[in-house]
Image (cartoon, rainbow, N blue to C red; front, side, top):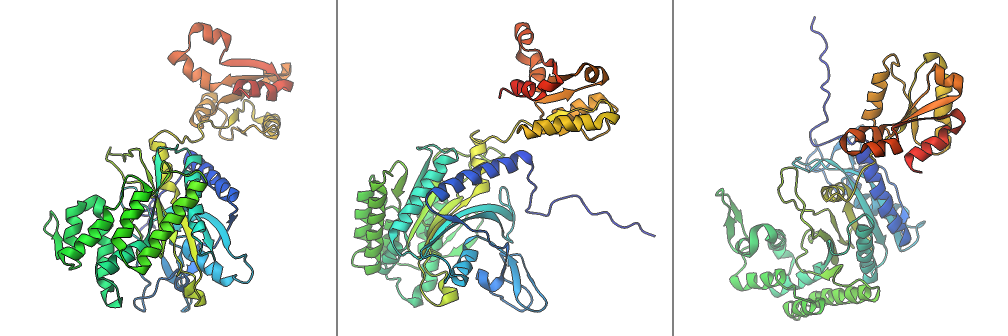
Length: 487
């Protein structure tokens, strides 16, 4: 009979495994960001990784499977369930479900993995970590200004100094006003507005002429594929293009230009006034244009947001594993006043920001600004199986003293293999006690880091000053290890 097929030892497509240093670095980053959020008065919230498809806002296009983009399944012919695809949709459900118990405004931060059923690509995975902070229940743009300030502080806290990032702020209402001036107001122009949004979102990739083509009849790319445009007249397209190039040398000049573009549009004027107020509130706290700027070029996600929007841009170059320039694009946020209304039927203002932790971590690693834990545990070697209790007593003392340590638990027959194991674990010290050392009440401390460096760059005098192996009294084990570790 055929033997049972063995499962392949591989991760599913679009997923990956994270080992010690990566997990340590991510935790350090999350802890640093959480400390900033906590300082601003936000409380932590953990929600289930699984939500109903209805709560997530994804609806079934047919009876067989849920909408693409989420990992979902049907539970006993009842509701469809899905893994969360972001941390905002669960927040909207929480804000509605516990609205009588939560403070208003409700300020929370959340961190954890999210899942997206999308086609994976280089640096694009189906599971990744997000770190969000949101204020639900406040219509004041002071809440938006606070999010921007907090974002700037968080970036600096994790190791991105001032000058290496900029937080850009825009407002969906300003674009709505521009579209109104361009003659695109009204429900019957919804399709054209969607095309316009997608077109101006591509200005960095296609350039002004490419966007202008998409605002008009359409654009044919290098492969010959044709993308239908919004069908705007040249005059209408010129109004929209003016929005994409409205940034000036100062925030005041940018706001003045935007005010010209929105003309008599009430919604546009409201958006410009909100940008002015945000700039004033930030300036009062000492956040100048070296950190946060008004920039109409922020268009990503404008279809989702209802007011101010913001995103962070790293100003230093990031290269991928093949040496190609890579877009950072992992921090974005804004006001989304309609999300909780899905549950309650009542307007509930909300604003927040989401940080893509994995990409931010990769950017910092690429610049050598975030290092994982390079030192492993102190390894207590085993010279005699019958004396395991003695070795366990040693490791217990080290742990009680706050020193990371472990006993070698493999086959102790070959001592060389124990040292190889310690090297593979990046252990700084190996502790050795054979029968002779035990009888004399001694223990040997082998400095594995120094020992590895001696052949490379240590002089004979340095070796004599600090040999790679010392013998200490058993009673001085902890003190000897601390001295060798430089504690």
